[in-house]
Picture 1 (cartoon, helix red, strand yellow):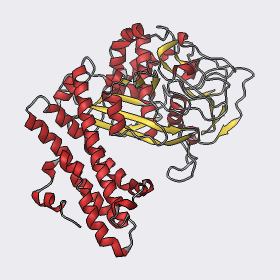
Picture 2: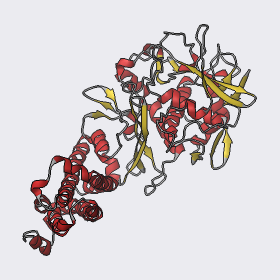
Picture 3: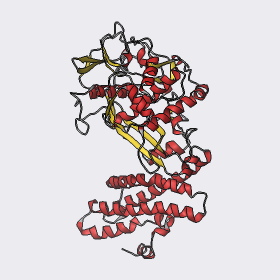
Picture 4: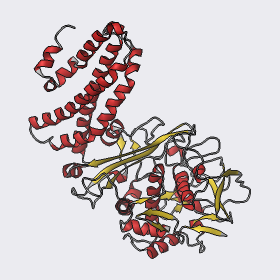
Length: 530
């Protein structure tokens, strides 16, 4: 018995309000008619997008078709073309009673393999690891729909890491404590909007994969097969059995866990089990597998890891984009069909992950705000200019942060610098973090503006550099005033401490590097005695 057939049953809810089959979804994306998937949880978004793109590209390549269709019946035929051995659509069904046959993202279970661990809810199957039952509640989807199980399966099987003995992770990541990171360009709805249209993004990525497939296969050292396995859940998974890279398609969709979903009178649950080895024999590749969304470290040949405390902030992004230490993924380059007038944004997403724990979903959208930036994107000269400008801005942030921290610890030391020690600076952690968060919100806006005037005269370049420093200085003063009352200081010395702290905030380093920020009055003030 098979149930919940994704090719025939409208299980997927979208906005504008509709319930769609999987072929309906692909057709609607091709027509750019969807705004969102209403039941998709934020951390599941990258996995769902990558799954749909890989699936569409595999189906089109199998059919030797380059045009992306926008009709449901065409997509239905393309998807069934990937599974011709299964006329009853078992590989597209969430639940299949005959475990010797595949179900959706669930490999056949051969004799001798036991699945004995019950999973009561869809969110219990998902990849999030929570240590406390607050913030994001655990096991709440007691009445979860088939759609919840669909998204949980995609999230788990294409993005899970190592979860303890026998709970293996995917190979498209750098080790079991990592996650599958995404760094890409995506088309914006308009140049001024911070909205990525799911359909336009889907069409772009599929088109790029199809256009570049032959070139990537010729360049890679990985022995992928041009007609290899794309849907890894079609293959039976015996204990100790591993799929080899030479037998896989370059766009393979992997599964990493033994799972079977059960449907009893409309109530869905699951059972799962462990495995001695990863499903695919590629652990030594450290995630460097031609994943079109994954940045690869040049020297260490490994994919990006965002630790459980890591962030996709300006420091991380500028290192990835401009340092030259990382090979940008295929989809982070401007496509052949994208001109300078195409509104584009950098999209960076990853699940922060540590040793058997997750630290939260990280997502960042940074618009490329001018034709000049888009036109020069990826060119060696542009990358070097952006690298130098980003370094200058990072140094500026550090200068203001240093002045902020020293002035606050001076207040805590009753205005006596001799009493300051290394531990004193722990009192300023929150203040510096606040300044860094503000800097993060304006960093790329000013970076793009400075890039645009780089070919102009010195006055224009200085004006843009000063504009960035001016905003940092304004916020530094505000944060100083906010945190100053919290600095511990004996009331007898409070007035003296605050006067000296305000003077210290206008540090010699800041005055030498940004003299325009300080008026004649302020310049005289810092030379006076307390």
